[in-house]
Image 1 (tube, rainbow, N blue to C red):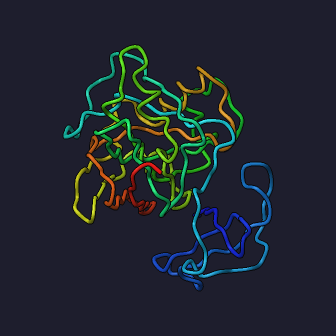
Image 2 (tube, rainbow, N blue to C red; image 1 turned 60 degrees about the horizontal axis):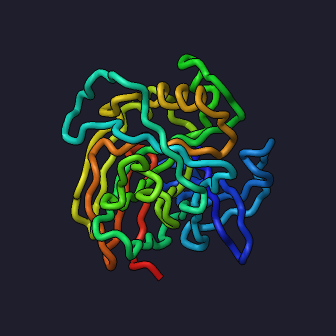
Length: 265
């Protein structure tokens, strides 16, 4: 199932997306859900809309936090090295989250801002200290993200806060895929294009700390809440972006997330 969050006629809804590739009766549509998938039971409310007639939003607007993972890949290396240290965690504010087609705003303080194409894990229930073997029970689904980073603002002693916390620096979308198993999600292709030119590519199997370990470790540090998002790191590394360009991030089996880039306003 694909769960989207969308705007239609000045109101915001969750819905179930059906694509032509699914072979169903209603291709490229979204069917409205009644209720909040992260707060309780939901059911189809009836209205069905063409995707062309709605505006897709970030599929989840985290009520709590976005958790990033640093130094979790070696770009160009298909088989990751064995980890020697625990995952490196940083937090991004929920105000950094934007959805498909919303603009990434480059801060004037930075002259070296990069994209980082990643798989994102969306948490579905309150959890703490989750054993690795029980991680699938707490995952709601997966989406696409761009962990935008002002690389030249990385600072000794505070390496990630100023570099990653800017408004618009966490695009998410286009929807959450809930039907992928943890095993399937652990070997997906991830690529980034800038103005249709391929700039990075890799696979989630190239992550040093795999998905289950990331979720388990993060939950050992802090309580995870429904709608929290964990960014798993960019297996293809980063690539520079500048105002006037368009960035597209694609994760196999999930979809494409596209955002224009503008200067700070």
